[in-house]
Image (cartoon, rainbow over all chains, first blue to last red; front, side):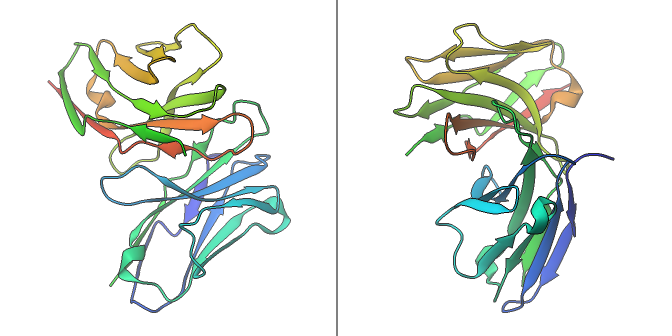
Length: 114
Length: 115
């Protein structure tokens, strides 16, 4: 399978715990994005990487959120001291270096904070 | 800031019939892309169709076509000969050009296809 993959697919955690999600983009896609999607809403942009550089970050991304993309390959999204409001689907997408920049989405990681 | 509005939370269509999903957006920019994405239940989002704002011709992909009205800031999706597999959430998305690569999504329209 050469699509975008995300791990884990589901995560249940207790409030106050830290969680980390992983995204593996399509090979040779230099751009990688994280979105958050809550029930009944469209995806909301969180952050964007071009290669290993984090070029844009939403105000939605509080200090408890951090994302990395070492070596410009896979990316991790960490949430520290989780809160119930963090419960959502976290989507990763990647895109090649092309003008129209179609984003290919992964299946998402569903986070439930108890 | 740009916004995308999908005013139809849910739509139904009979199999083999045609349905149109609405999307409006607000922007002060002249160059941008618009997209329709499909999100089937418990499956990942896939691109349905893309429209570049500088192109006057409406995009078409097989049974899917758009009606792009730039002045009205409207971008509707028409699905012809609806199939059971078309049942999904449909999201309209906007992307500025050039500059930011982030998408701004609408809240989605749930499409039900009736046999």
